[in-house]
Amino acid sequence: MIDYHIHTKRCGHASGEMYEYVERALELGFEEMGFSDHFPFIDRVRPELAMSLSELPDYFYDVEQLRKQYPQITIRLGTEVDYFPHLEKEIGGLLAQHPFDYVIVGVHFIGDWNFDNPNEKNEWQQRDVNEVYEQYIQLLQQAANSRLFNIIAHCDLVKIFGYRPTRDFHEQWDALVQCFAQNDLVVEISTAGLYKPVGEIYPSEEIIGVLKKYDVPIVISSDAHQPQNVGRNFDQAINLAIRHGIKSIAQFEKRKIIQQLPIRHHY
Ligand SMILES: [Zn+2]
Ligand SMILES: [Zn+2]
Image 1 (cartoon, rainbow, N blue to C red):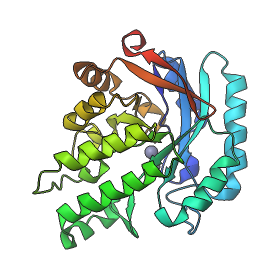
Image 2: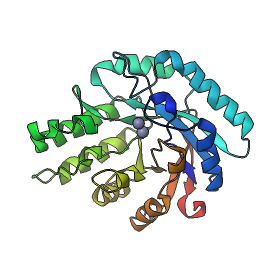
Image 3: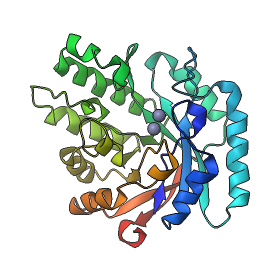
C-alpha cells in the first residue's frame, strides 16, 4: 500500500520526527510512502500552517537522507499546496524549480477565511452555506484548470464541521469531477475526515461514485500529522473504493503517474 499525504513538524501543527513516520509505514507493511508537507505561503507568513520558503532545502535534504537510511521502502517527495487563485503564477514558478514526485492541492481558504480551521469556525454562522459550497467548488475548479497540480486533497473538505447545503449539489459535484478528469488529476480518498466533526471519509460516497463514472484515478491518504496516523483506517477506504468498482491506485514519480497498482494486492 502507499500513503502519499504525510506532514512533518515543519508545518507548525504536526508532531514527531520524519523517521517515525517512515517507521510507522514500515510497521504497516507499506512498500511506498511520500511526504507532502504544507508548501510555504507565498504572500504571508503563517508558521502555524506551513513551513517557510527558506526551510524547503532542509525538507528536501531530510527526505534524501531518509531514502538512504530506509532503502526497503520507496519514499517520495511531495508537497501540499494551498490554492490561492491570485498566486497561480508564483506557485507555478516555485513548483517548477523543485524536484517533487507529486503535488497535492487543497483548498482551505475562501478569500481570507480559513474555513476548516476550528479557530475560524464561528464565521460559518455569518455565511450562507449554499454560497460557501459554491465558492469552494469554484475554487477547486480553478485549481484543477490551472494544471499546476497532480492530486486533489480531501475534495469535499467543505463538509468538515457538518454544515450542509440546503440545495442539491449533485450537478456541481458531477461537473467538478468531470473537470478533474479533463485535467488529468488524481483524487485522494482521505481517511482524515473520520476524525473531524463530520466523521466521514473525504469525499462522500456520492462523489466516489462520480469518480468511478469519469474514471478518475485515486490514491488513498491519511493526511497524517502524527506518526501513528500514517495509513490510518486504510482498510475502510479500500473497502469503500472497491464497493464503487475502483480497482487501482496511482503511483507517482517525477510528477507523473508511472503505474496504476491493483488495490487488492495492497492490504
Ligand atoms: Zn496540516
Ligand atoms: Zn494535509
